[in-house]
Amino acid sequence: MSDARFRNFRVWGLSGALLVTLGLGACGDDNGTVQVPEPDMQVYPDFSNAKLYDCDTPGEACNPHDSCALNPVCGDDKKCHATGYQNCDDGLSCTDDTCMGQGLCEHKPVTGMCAIFVKEEGKSVQKCFKANEPHPDDACRLCDPTQGEDALTSWSPKNGGTCDDGNDCTKDDYCQSGTCAGTPYGDKCADGYSCTTDKCDGKGGCLGFELKADACLINEDCYIDQQQDSTGCNICDIAKSQTTWTPLGTFCMIDGQCYKPGEKDSIGCAECDPTVDDKAWTPLAGVCKIGKSCYQPGDKHTGLCAECDPTRSATEWTIKGSDCLIDDVCYKPADKDSIACAQCDPTVDKKAWTALTGLCKIAGACYSPGDKHTGLCAECDPTASGTEWTVTGDNCLIEDKCYATQLTDTTGCGVCDPAADKKSWTTVANKCKIGGNCYADAASEGGDNCLLCTVATSSTAWSPGATSATVATFDFEGNVLPTGWTVTASAISEGVTWSIFDKRVSGGTYSLYYGNVATNDYDSSLANDGSVKSADITLAAGKKAGLRFWLYMDTESGASYDTLDLNIVEGTSSTNVWSKSSSTKQEEWQEIVVDLSTYAGKTIKIDFAFDTTDSFSNTGEGVYIDDLVIYDDC
Picture 1 (cartoon, rainbow, N blue to C red):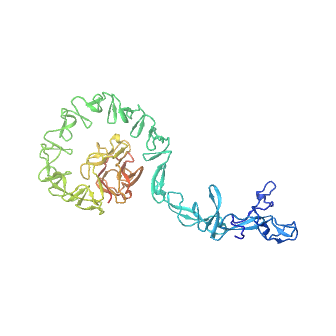
Picture 2 (picture 1 turned 135 degrees about the vertical axis):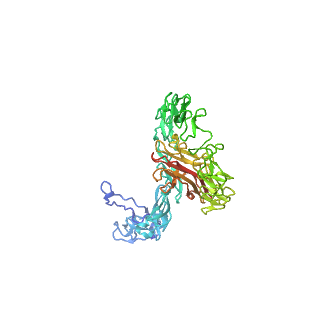
Picture 3 (picture 1 turned 180 degrees about the vertical axis):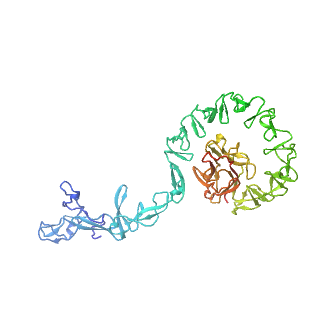
C-alpha cells in the first residue's frame, strides 16, 4: 500500500469521480456533458493532526501536497486545507491502490497476481487470483501476469493440460490456445441410423444409441412420427410403438403387400379375408386354384382326364374315369412311362406311376433282375428293392460309386466297411470327420486350442479345446431349424425360402438350404431374397471367438447377383463380416472361417442373407449351409 489510509483497489486504471462536470459528449446528457458520480469521501480521523502546507491567498485553491486531498482551499491561516479525502481502497488484497488526484484512483495488481471479474450468484465480482490459477469454470483460461498489462485484469489462454470440451464423442481433451478440444471418434459409435442419437463415453468407448423422441426404427429403417409404410396400411405412431408398425385398420399383409378386405389376388381365385387369415389369400368358395391359374367348376384339364371339382379339391385336378394324371400329363390304363418300367394303374394310384413287377427303376433308368451297376459292385434285385441297387459281395456303393472293402475316401477319414454300412463311409478309428475335413484324435484346428478333435466325445463334431471354451454346433440333423432361429423370405408363398433339406450335405443327412425344396431351385416370378437369423448368442468377454461353416453354392458366380452375406446383428445394428465374392467356389463344398473376437462379451445374432437382386438365371440349386460351429471363451 502507498498510504496507511488505503487498503486495496477494484480496477487497475483510473476510477472515482470529480466534483466538476467534464465535457464527454459521447455519453453525455442533452448538453453534451456527463456527470461523474460523487467520490467516496473520507476525512482523516483526526483532521487536526493532518500536515498542512503553506499557501499564499486565502480562499483560493492551493497545493495540499497529497494526491488524495479533495477541493483544497487556502485558509485564513494561509494553510492549505482539504474538504475531504478520496478513499481509493477497492477491498482487494492483491492490488496497490494509489490516488491520482482530482478524485481519480489507480489500482495495480501486485507482482504475481491478477484481479479479474467473475460471476457469482448472477453478479459480476472482482476477485484475486494467483499466477497460473485457473478460471473457476474454464480449465483452459488462467491468470498469467507475464502476458502483459491486459492480462492482469483478464483471463489468459492456456496451452496444454486436461479439460472437458463437453462433447462425449471426443477423447483426450486438452487445452489449445484457451480452447478445450478433443480428438473426435463419434464415427466409431455411429450406427448409421438418422433417427438415433449415438452415445459415447468420452473415453473412446460407445454407449449404444438412443432413439429420437419423434421417430420410429422399424426393421432397421427410420421413419418420422405419422409416416406410413410403403403399403399404406401401417403408420409410425410413437404414442403406441417406436419399433413396430401400428396398423391403420383391418387388412391383409400378403407377401409384403397390403390388401383391403375383399381385394382379389392376381388371378381372381382368392381374396383378402382378415377374419380367416390376415397373412395369406383366402380361396374363394366354388373355384379351384391349381398351379398359378384359377378355374371354375367343370373346367377341364388340357388332357381331358380331369376337371375342377371344388367339392373334391380346390387346389388339385379331380381325375374322372379310369385315367391317370401323372406330372400334369393324362395317361390311359396300362400306358407305360418313358423307360417302360412303370405303368398307369388307376386301381393302385391315379397320380403316380405304378412300378412293374420284377423290374428296378433306379435314377431314371429301368433294369431287369441281375442287371449290373457300371461299377459291378451291385445289381438289380427287385426282391430286395425296386428303386435302389442291391450291393453284392464285400463292397460299398457310396454316392453311386463302387469301392472295395477298406478303401478310404479322399480325406482319408472314411473307409468302406461293408460290415458297418455298405452305402456310406464309415469313419476311421481314432479320427474325426468334421464337415469335409479329416482330423487325427487330439488335433487342434487353427492351433489355438479352441476346437479339438476328441474321438471319445464325438468323431463328427468339434469338442472344446481349452477347459473354459464353449462350442455350439448346428448340423441341422433334427430336420428342423434350431430353437429360436427365425426366417423371413419375400417369395415364401412361391416356396422359395430358408428351410432344412436333405439334397446335399457336408456331413450327416440334412443341411440348411435356400431355395424351393419342391423344384430344387430358387426361381420365382420376381427377384427374391431371404434371411435366416439365429437366436441370441452371448460370447464370453476378453477371449477369442469364431465361427466356421461349410458352404455349397449353385448360383450365378459374380459378386453382384445372387449375393450371400453373413451379418452380425447386435441389437438393431447389423455388421457384415463375410460376403460371397467372385472367388467363392461354385458347385463344391468349401469351409468359411470368420473371426468373432471383436464381439467378445457381447450378445449377438448371426444372419445369413441371400438376394437374387434380379429375376434372371435363378434355376440353379441355390445355397446349402452345413456343420456350422460357433466357439468362444478360449
